[in-house]
Image (cartoon, rainbow, N blue to C red; front, top):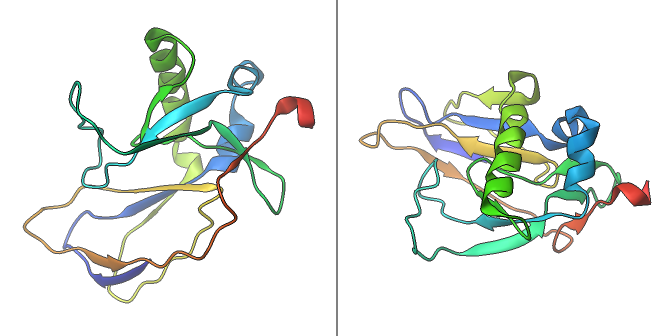
Length: 163
């Protein structure tokens, strides 16, 4: 991600270490996540889920815990902004589990917040790092150029039983 134009305030990007987050989860939650999948909505125009009842938005189902294809390290594959629900459980259980995960996802010890300056270049491994921008004044410009390198296909699930 390369900064071309940045707002005077806000518009930072927060990066979270999803492998460290998974490792920090209590064993009971890691056990609960084993084999679960979640639906992730892809609405890039906002920093919060603003999809109303019955509105259609592009989405994809992914494992909630994935294995890094090179290191084999498990990572939590859940986003406070994009993960809508846990597949195969009640709405109540889904929201309860996602709420517990958000408490860990947002802990400062796992997050680096980049305050952009023109000319900054930041690289990250999207297979084990979550990222999101902070709000900024919409009257100001924020232009960043993103380049993605070819990946290795869909994320592969990590199973506790495969340890």
